[in-house]
Image 1 (cartoon, rainbow, N blue to C red):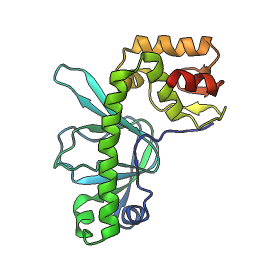
Image 2 (image 1 turned 135 degrees about the vertical axis):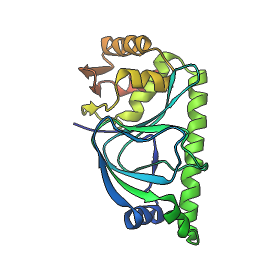
Image 3 (image 1 turned 60 degrees about the vertical axis):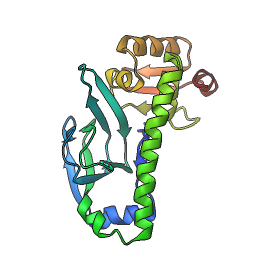
Length: 214
């Protein structure tokens, strides 16, 4: 079984990985726990060592927006402002290397680390902009197909574990949960994907799924 999820910012740049390992304190959180809250002070950065996390934001009209999903190797909580714009919650049992922002700032003379931090923040902003454009110009079928492609290992027929539920998918893709369920049912009926329950799936026909996502 494959656990594939990588939509976040990785801390695999050598300087960043070294800083997280050297300065970080190991912490564990069980499934369903808030790591940090929306509008809370952004004084910590989290290197995700295992598990899955989602970031969410409550809008003024009561709707929930999902910012991103994160998996092993992703960096969470790195922001240019003093507070978190999103809250972060565990989708499974998780372990982290937690680093104080002030500790990272003390190493500000390290050009390689500075470059890695700015590159990470640039990529996060770029991903957020691309996601907004994606939601504005694609159909429900395209959104679901692209999401499943981003989760599954390319050209693999291995069974994939989804850490998020259908409501999470719907909120991330800007769709109603009923629309997500209908689209998934259509893809299954067309023998493009195969679900086992709601949390496990595998791609049966990559060519067809990629065509729908184009």
